[in-house]
Image (cartoon, rainbow over all chains, first blue to last red; front, side, top):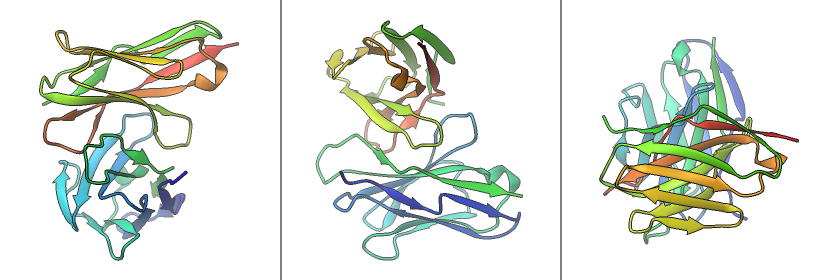
Length: 115
Length: 112
């Protein structure tokens, strides 16, 4: 069964460092998302991406965040200067083949620990 | 702002019993609702969804009920099994959006 894959599974970084989280969405999907989940809390929307541009973003997704689809398969989330409060599980998701399709398929997540 | 929330943070049931997990939403314009299951250390996994033009949908051992009058969503799990132990999230999608907004989650604990 097709699945969303994410790397790395866990990254530890120092405060102020740049981090890139990588995702390979399901191959025929058109919509891509990043969500984050602080330990023990709910899953929070960050950004959605379609047709090589951001289609929607939340208040969390400020100037330190960026997304990119550098090639036909990868979808990345960059955090330019990490803060302690960026420590969370980051989930990539994809959906949609063009028609109405509400379900988002999630990856297993990348745990980011900022020290 | 608009939000999706859950009534109970933890639900403990006996194996074999039926479970009911409730969720309230505030966006009357939401047109799509979905339940996800999240096991420890894993990503959310789709359980069942329902569109706003329906009030009930059944899957395998699961049923989702939607009451638009009171903006309430519930997930019913029949004959709950130990493998059902997880955190369950409801989520909704506002009209014209693709992204989902998640609620706070309910932890389901199944006692053997």
